[in-house]
Length: 165
Image: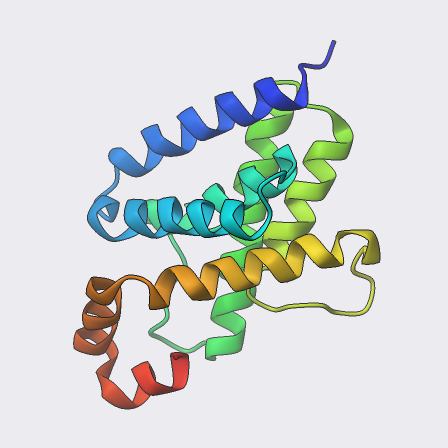
């Protein structure tokens, strides 16, 4: 028996908070996820549960020590693709484990999988507006946090920061 979408949202939000609070990236990640959800709900006050879970959990992979690293032998595009895939896999596995509805799992999986790479061939066009909103809220939340911009500049330099903005 599956649980309701609203209950899935409640459980997922609590789980994401717990995972992030127990990570070494809490100070950086939690404000970003909260701002992303806040902006997403400003842009779409009646957001469905799949979008809310995606807004709040799209970067969950960054909470883990095993997260994909930007450094190394992969390109930035490969990094973004792998990061999105890992976050999507984590969330869909969690949602399946709590017996969420298949449609919710599918939508969250696709929104998170494509949140950093955008619309690609094969993407469910019915989810396009929510994907666009997720991408916009993600970008706005970065720009809305001066400390995030300062941290990014300190880590990657002004040139990379300018590119990101």
